[in-house]
Length: 411
Image (cartoon, rainbow, N blue to C red; front, side, top):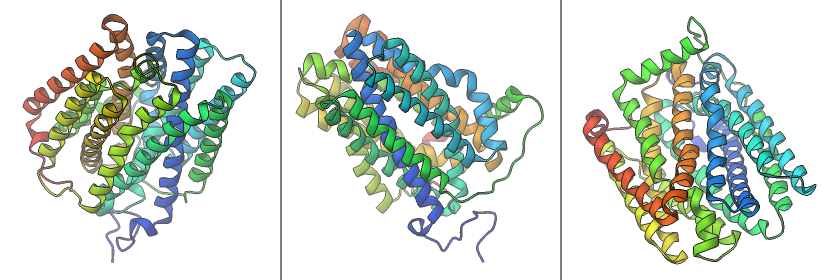
C-alpha cells in the first residue's frame, strides 16, 4: 500500500497519468504565456509612449510594490484557505486586468498612468496566486516525484516563455489590440484550467495571532533553515543584479534598430535554453552534489549576462541569452526542490509567500534597478555591472552558506 503521509496520489501513478497534475500544468502553462505576452506588450507600449528607460523600470517597481503590503496575508491564506480557490480568484483578477488593457487600447485611452495602475493590480493578484499554486503542487504528486514534477512544470513554463514573447512580438506588428486580445484568451483558458482541478486536501494549521504574527513564524522557520534561507536569498540577489530583461526594448530599438519582433526573440531566447535544459533534467535527474552544481550554474548565468551586455549583434546575443536561461533552469529546479522538500506542508504557504516576494524583488525590482542604472550609466554598462554584481554575490554565498554548497541530494 502507498504511504498515505506521502501524497494523496498513488505512488504507482506516473505524472503523465495524474489528471490533477496535468490540469494544473496546463493552467500554469497558459498563465505563464499570458504573463509573458503582457510583459512584452506593456514594455514596448510604454517605451513607445514615453521613450524612457526609467519608465520601463517603473513598470517593474509598480508590480513589486503590492506584494510588500500583501505578502503576509497571501502566505497565511495559502496555509489556511483552499489553495485552488485562491488560484482561481487571482486568475479572475488577471482576466479583468487584461480586459481593461484591451478596452483602453482599442479606445486609444491608454497612457502611462493607466499602465502603472493596471500593472500594480496584476502584481497584487500574482502575490496571492504564486504561494497558492506553489504550495498546491506538492499536494498533487507523491513526494518521490516532486523534483520531477517541478522540472516538468518548469519546462512547461519555459515553453510558454519561448512562445509567449515571440508571439507577442509578431502580433504587435498588427497592433496592440491583437496582442492584448490573444493574451486575454490565454488568461481565460488558464482560469478554466484551474477550475478543472479536482478539490484537494491539505493540512490547515493556522497559527495563533494576527496576520503578521503568522507571517513572522514563516520568516523564523526560514531563518532557522540555512539551506532554505541560502537558496531563497541567492535567487533574490543574483537575479536582482543580473537581470537584463527590462532593458531589452531599448537594446532592440536603439542598438539593433529593430522592432518588437527582435524584442520577442530576445525575450524568448533564455526560455529556449531553459526548455532544453529542463528536458535534460527530466531524463537525467540530478542525483548528487546538487549544491555545487547550483552554484556553478549561477556563475555561468552571471558570465552569460556580462557577455550579453558586451554583445553588439543579435545573433551573438541570442545564444548567450539561451545559455543564461539554461543555467538558470538548473538553479531553479535545485532551489525549488530544496525549499519544498525541507518545508512542512502547513508552512508551505508562508514560505512560498516569502519566496515569491524574493522572486518578485529579483525580477520586478530588478527591472527597476536596471532602469535606474541604465539612466545613470547607459544600457550596456548597466547590464555588465549587473552581471559582475551577480558573480560577486554567488562567490559570497558559497562562503556564507556552506550548508547549501554541500547539499548532496534532492531528497
